[in-house]
Image 1 (cartoon, rainbow, N blue to C red):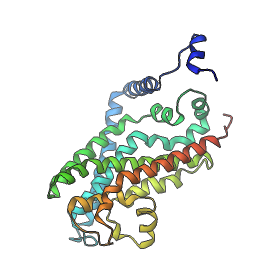
Image 2 (cartoon, one colour):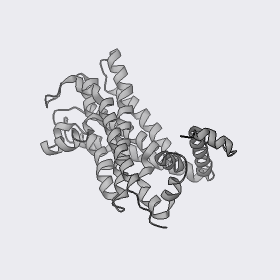
Image 3 (tube, rainbow, N blue to C red):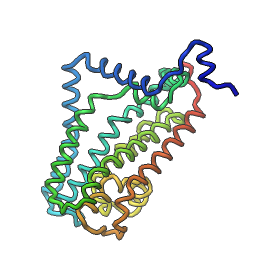
Length: 281
């Protein structure tokens, strides 16, 4: 079998370097989105306010009750801040994949598939929403403030957990974004269906799991893994036992859960690519 690199050299061409190509796409997006600076800054500022509204909803609940299902304001705020930070990181990095149905309709997906780069990598780099950077930065600040407010009994293990927990939550939500978008390969108008798992999962994960009925805990919390976005790490950081009786080590399995979710999402994405049929647009 002929070496592709040797064949390229004979033809006088050069194989593309994926990292350089992706970097070029990201720089092009940054330049295009920064052309109208006032609009960009206004959009970034307003989108950042949406995260504060999510946490304000938690504060509104605690205006009428000192505890929620046996959990204090500090514990619920920490759960919500962990979940929100992880979700916004995922939304910044892969959230634009939810536009897959538009890419299919407009024919962009056809153009992507003929290029010698990963289709998923191209779509993520082609429409990276830089306006969401402000929201992610704001949620990082809020997360740090909530960690201080929660008055935790810090240990080296908890310090490590406080760092890896939002990263694992971001990986979990990113997998949900990709899996939900992949449904569009078979069902072009699946946007609302996918939103039920992405944005619905985010709302679900902002509150302690024992608040929900058993069938929701079985499907969303542990079937889809949303309990590991905020609830399980909160238990470990606060040093309290789970009323549901789950073992303490479960909080440390977050990276494994995120890896399993990614493997499932990539398998679904590749299956969708293999079964993709162009719309002919």
